[in-house]
Length: 81
Image (cartoon, rainbow, N blue to C red; front, side, top):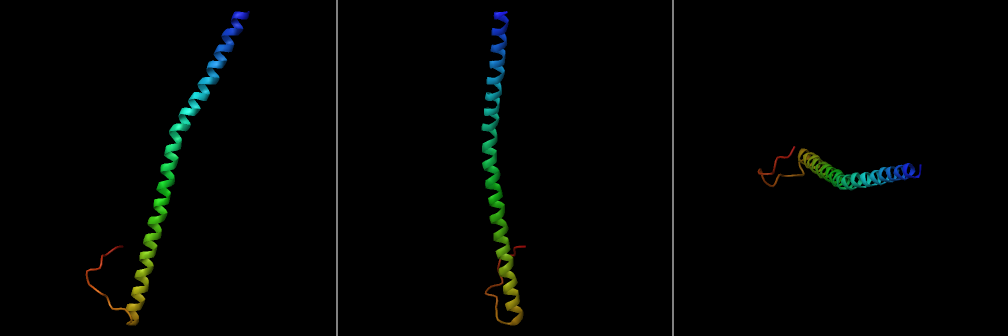
């Protein structure tokens, strides 16, 4: 009986240690992806703000042009949509 209980303890210990080791490995794989996802989201936000600023500048220039206040400096301005 003592021998049987020693085997059970060893099996339980192996299962518990295996579970913790597996969880640690999964956690190590997930965390780098989490930081990449955060960087991607920040890049999306910055890009969105950049194009909103460009659209606002164009809207203001168009209004000024319609009112006769603004004269285009050159005809070679980049065309960004």
